[in-house]
Length: 340
Ligand code: SF4
Image 1 (tube, rainbow, N blue to C red):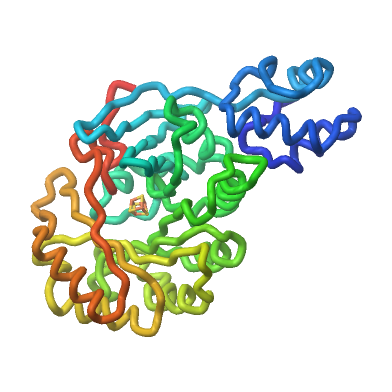
Image 2 (cartoon, rainbow, N blue to C red; image 1 turned 120 degrees about the vertical axis):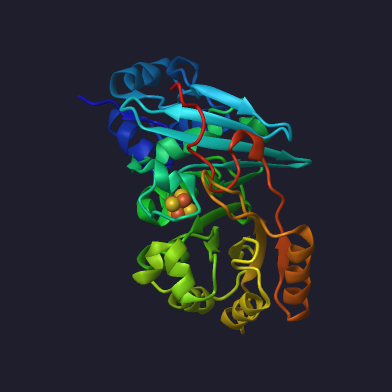
């Protein structure tokens, strides 16, 4: 019999597993609290359950909590971790401390099949989806697990290409019986896989961030191939059709590349596609990938964009680059840890 991994199961699923032997929903929640809040990886250490239940669990389950293989720390204190599953899938996770806000950037796939031109993960190729447990483990297995306040799904992989596992991971992160992190502090990014975006907005209360790159379809297609199948205009229409809730933020991530997508023409295009929406814009510096002649827009240019968006009634902010020296910044995951 293949043993179930407890990490990645909901409280209801654990109850389904142990209920037939006479254990209760309260026992199930004791198990989820031990795994998700205390990062307990040894079944014998699970709190507030009888020994008979521990013995039963040994026979049918494993904790599913596993440690990273390696780590690298940036001068800005961000830490990149490498994980490897039993089946050999490798993926990276980044911990980003910032005063009281401590964010974990999780991967949803080993590699990615979207092939975006500006992203090293895309060049690494697609090695497989991560399970909900493998996604959650990237938070609870970190030495800083107890300090985590925010989770972003912006690591390796396109989350909407692994939708069911991402939705389940979001539910475990935000549930009281899980990690109990507010959905307001959980953001999932996408390049715009339309069927997934629709489902995600219907079935999750977490934030959504759409990577734009260019407001013009012909240009966007060259960098984000999925634009050919799912035009960004349609994705934004879907986002606009979901009423803004206090607890949820819908945003556009706009990576700014000097002279390529930071012209006045692009600014006009950006404002046009956002007209009449409450979608906010996060402006991000570009990180050059190998053999790439492009470079990031200047700070002044980014400030100019921010100012112009704000005076047009569009909420905008500039995001700092973190972990660039250890290839942990956006679009750079999969460039390190060569010896593993
Ligand atoms: S930007 Fe995102 S969707 Fe595109 S290749 Fe990289 S990881 Fe995949």
